[in-house]
Image (cartoon, rainbow, N blue to C red):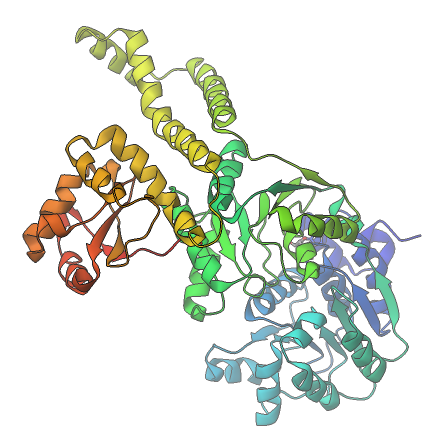
Length: 571
Ligand code: AMP
């Protein structure tokens, strides 16, 4: 039986006080199991994922074991990434708040080594770092391990996957013989067992089953979905559920960039996070997400490793991870601290068997959900808006009432005014949803023109919108179709993305006029134009693309700074 109260773990008053302040009422299962063993200075292997409270499971007891009479580093934590190192460091800082003589420092690559020299000179009792940088400091003699009591390997499987095995072994070999080794890992891969056998002394093994982690706090769904519908599906899941913070996982960096841009185009505050970005960019993206300025973080598994952000409403698996173990990591980012979370996994017909594997792995049901139809989105949005309006109507603001009266004086009845307001709020999205439904209902073409077909998704909307709205330019789109399928790509033309759309009152003639006027390219040479809500596409002869990019990116259209770029082909 595990102990379910912090008070029965024999912790100091300082720690008990801080736990109270942090609102940690009871130990999580991994904490209840691990704390007594770590306090007793035993070696330990803990199998638990991010989100289970594993950091505090080693941080609380290791802080308690610090001997204030010793000067020197007593605890060393190795983490796979800088992000995780910073998170673990923050947790130590919080938990050691009343251990006033206990100093903590984080050392990782990408940060000034001089600053780290200064920090290490203070002989911090706790050092958290990434393996490469820790090894570097040991070699330079700036980190001394002769007083080390406890070495903690956090997310050991990930460190091994990232190729840190030699660095870890190097560090282990520099530690005193009597030190304690605590190893946390999400999986017990054979390499982990090998490392444990070699360096751990009769360790306690604690396993927190995935089931504990997910079953009660998380609803898992999968949505049968083709690649071309994933953006639409994401958009509808988020809008339909009114999610505020969403983590979206892709398998590749290219996919991260692509999904982030597509979601931005639909008006979402989405940003990508992957290993090709500089550390400064990654920090900025993470901070934006933590602060809620970015509401969708689109990431690869490695970049999001150890990421701990409170209040993530849902995790969307844009791609099913190649390594199913990652699935458990991914969905562990939502449904934390007693709040219910949700995960959505997109799967095409050939991937449905993987859903069964994932269900087995998490020992939980993964429920099939359908991509909400335009009509259900529309009904839901109208219903929610109706409820909101009724609530607001209870205490309506006099200034707004006055506005309605002013309209009435101009001959607009309150009914017409209210309906116009609703139209303004709802129509654009509703039009888009209906257009998306039509586009999705079209059969996917087989082989040969498949790429062109998926490329045409955005264009699809454009055609509809244009035929509805673009009046005089319709001949342009008709001309584009004459040669056959409108999804056929024209090999001599390049498609450019423009950052302005209907919201900027952009009309096809504005685009033609601006390009022709500024670059001298004849209006007849300009191909299809697709105007969307807040962006557009235009086809330009390939040999003119450089000129257009060079000239147009310094110009304005309809008073707006304009940016042209080569459109990314849809996948
Ligand atoms: P971790 O698995 O270490 O990434 O922790 C996940 C989150 O749970 C962190 O935000 C911790 O601050 C929080 N946490 C850790 N232990 C507890 C606890 N006993 N009660 C409530 N929250 C906790």
